[in-house]
Image (tube, rainbow, N blue to C red):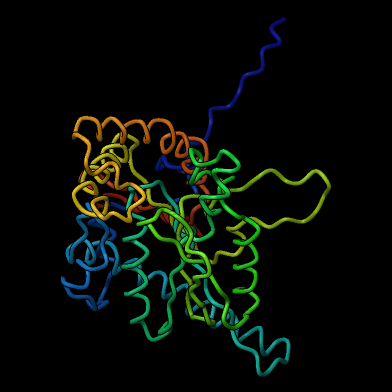
Length: 328
């Protein structure tokens, strides 16, 4: 008798069928949900907010981000209403609501920073959330000195290169409603944490927390200690998605463009790449992608996509072509 066990097919959460926890929308359909949300940004502001090689413009803000800011504002207002109801239920007074935290995840070069900055500017113009702060996980990387000592420079951006304890303490203080919580600062010029430099977060209405691995889970400790995940502190989470081949191209293109801009600064960590020949520089970019960023994407970043509340799927032109929103 055949004892072979027939395995059920793996669920593809990103496939639009009755088993998916998401509702899927084309960019044009998603744009309709803007309703009467006014455009509160100018072309100059969008140009200032976007990252190098990111083509986001006012049309993309109208198409995607106005609807998204409307959705997020609705979530914020709902949480504020629930807070007031709970305050009455518990007969509390003189208590303030803790910040609404939005996590944004995705690969390098996919456009997380632009999305975070545009959303921050839009959300602070809604009456329910006038104070919006943005923090990236870059400041929570171990300093280069530590990474070199532990032979982790080639693993920078991987989970083990972050001071996860510091991340959890920061988010715990934010969600506890503490005043003047400090987040460490990072320099993309020197490619290192800035010693003694901090950004102070003082009870905003919304905190946007952006980084490649913010949705990642980890192995539970064998000693049974209770250890939260970073995403446990999120009220809403967004994953920026794209085909691997497109992210690869965007990464290499960005590296080559930085050779003509930031890398030319003598203080830049990558200054040595500005003077070498183009073919040699491209080979280095390809190596960095293949040996570091691609591995991190496959092992640690992409597997977290199904944990997001909303997925923004980009097309090869770097603009969003599909939105997936988790069902309620």
